[in-house]
Length: 213
Image 1: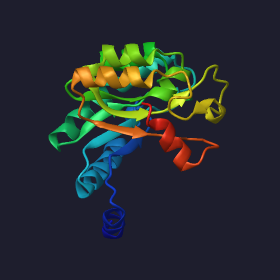
Image 2: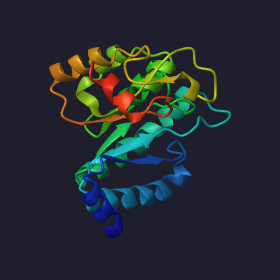
Image 3: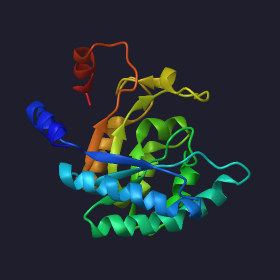
């Protein structure tokens, strides 16, 4: 831990968030999940960060996706309440190839959890490839946004590999400037992580392309 903190300081970097996933729909796994969460919270405190990004598990076999989401909700609310008591904020992260991908699924988990303790950690690329309207979800759930991953992409998406659909910011179909305008209107103060999963451009070319945003 101390070595990592030293290296981050030397590089001028800070930690924005930690990622936690697990079978939140399974009551038998609750103690294990909370133990992992406590480790994440301790680590976030050590690094001076406050965001815990919740990666949804794959949908369980034999259960509808919406049933699994409803089963996850109370555990995530309880986890969010515990995290908030420790100064940590929880954000659900809709992700391709997981149990929460689409706009309807994102709406469902945010409806069935307590908004005081569970927010939204949106990935613009994943949400777009899952068929969602990124600008609409930012407007609709703006008050619950607490972490953002900026990614650009083009449809259609063919499972399971989304790398061929990823583009540099401004070169895909996501209205990134529009999202930025809405975030400014909302007074958003959280993290925006630019994620570039795949590119054939140099870092300089990518940076130059971002200037227009």
